[in-house]
Amino acid sequence: MSERSLKILLVDQNVLRASILEDGLREAGCTSVIVVRDMQNLLKRIVATDPDVIFIDLENPNRDVLEQMFQVSRTVHRPVAMFVDRSDTEMITAAVDAGVSAYVVDGLRKERVKSILELAVSRFRAFNRMREELDRTKQALEERKTVERAKGILMKQRGINEQEAYALLRKAAMNENRRLADVAQSVVTAAQLFK
Image (cartoon, rainbow, N blue to C red; front, side):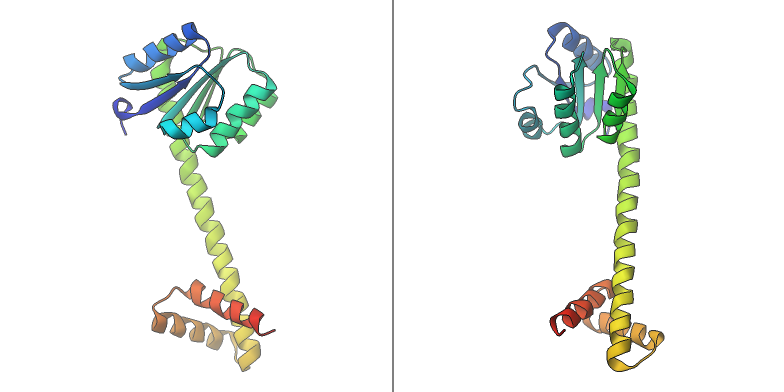
């Protein structure tokens, strides 16, 4: 996705600061920039706008405003670039934990906007790839545990060994044109029903 085709939502209550970011985004080739100045119902507005990237300029954020911004970044899975004038280690850690892709302290200059946009999008994509890989790994582990439980149930009920139990599961999966993990889950569920 090129910068030109990105829909950018710019959240900033300060007109001057928002214009600096908006100018920088337009100079970077972004043609769709929507500016929001009111923080009320921000999450609802973001969902309605459905932006590709969110730029948030908080000037001197307090804890309540930061928490609202972190809720946004956790709920709306989009690249988020956050600009603040002052920060501390705790705020930076909270921002990163909340999924903020670029956290810029005292760096509001329109010349930097394009590189910050590219960084936010790039880091967001990298983080998403890692999260998707982690989710796939967790799912594979859970499926493996289910298959092991199903094998144990079959071994106990039928008095067979592990290889024979696995062969039964595999044959049932092929005959029913289902995934092995799904057949194993059916065995586990049935065994729980008949306890």
